[in-house]
Length: 423
Image 1 (cartoon, rainbow, N blue to C red):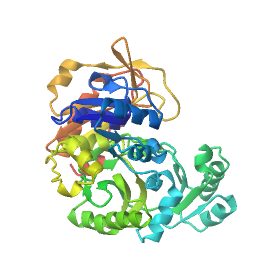
Image 2 (cartoon, helix red, strand yellow):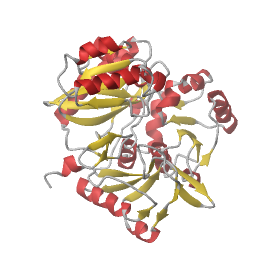
Image 3 (tube, one colour):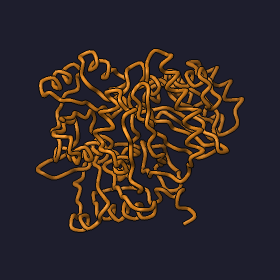
Image 4 (cartoon, rainbow, N blue to C red):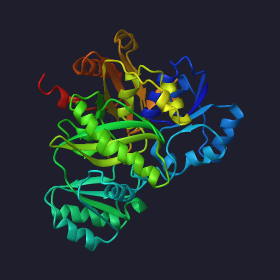
């Protein structure tokens, strides 16, 4: 079959990379892809949903997979389904789970899904009053999409009030921050759990752990993610069952009751507090960089997972995973996440790279000029290692990092440290 992938970051590149190895896949199109994806996919520059649907009809593309959240929130799935086209992703209404933090928090409250105490407001005085009741630190979130950067953990009441005021005034995140969530801080450890859903059925993927902070030891500003690993030993069968029964099942049941059955990827950001799962947030797509460590673990052909989910046939799929581990290290540009950086040519020592079995590069913020790749984005690429243990996968990922060069490159040196701290 021919497949269209919407998006052009590391997540979408990783999907395409593993789909191209799939015997069921003939041709891959990417809208818009990146400078490296043109090696194995046809990049197309079409952003309008109706024109993109026209292209799918013209090329007889059998399945469209949506990677990023923005087109989902903007209703691409609804446009395609209205045309009778097969597409993997959540509807506009279902995508409110990510598109509006206020909708999400009220949904959690309505369906008794565990979450932190909170208020939603567009009034500073109300936020200020609630902040004064909370212990430190305090979490302040912009309601709308902010590219993964709309959450601030304030270390004092004054800082929380200043953050709230800046969001509500539009200074921090424009219209996305005109309404906010203020909530209690939860003390525990974070997990990323993904369920691929078809409206009725679901398949749970191995739990991953992301590293949001820029610097080693989880300090510095929040980013879109500086690395991830999966599966994590910080979860066992009992915790999986709790997540399934306390979170996934009531979420899917609740969305059906809301009139928007959930299809696509339900990404649950969890805080584990005293062995109990508490929902921090939902996303309606694969995480980035979590997707890059989940794709290599799939033993079942990737196309089958997406196709069966889009067709509503997940119940018939026997989903299998390799008994291995994957670690991805994000290599970012010099000034990330503060400002853009000067484009720099990427040099990879291919002779060494080819000897490192179980490794690959997932490209993200790159462009191509005269057959050379340039680092042009904040998160430039991911160095991925796969091994029989987390340590082996991590060591491979960092060996590969050493073979990749561009001016100003930066990356964390401690990805997967929580899983390996006793090694």
